[in-house]
Image (cartoon, rainbow, N blue to C red; front, side, top):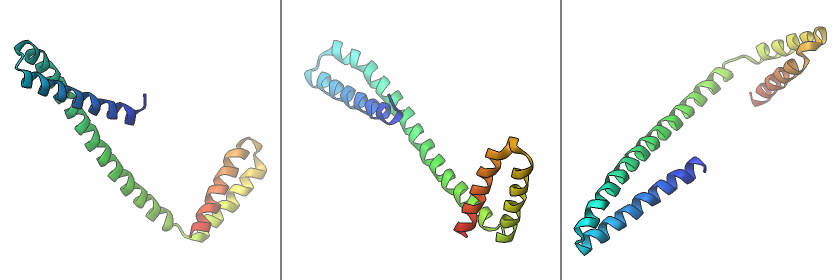
Length: 118
């Protein structure tokens, strides 16, 4: 079960529990009301955890956006000439050492993409 599906299911459990509690109170069945007290406590616990998870998710999303902006500003501050020089340096490494060939090719590709985005 994926997280979104699990959260949705938890909310469904809470809603079902509330309906059972409502019916028990409406019918005035003391034994059933006592049993539903446990359901109520469990629902409150689940709801509290879900609310905390949602807050953490929102906070993490906000941090991710801030980190992305910071990363982009740092990348944009690198002069084109410096990126071009690094590409040339990596091309020389690529031809001298076959062991790092794939990693260097990837670095060159990433740096070329950076240049294109400038």
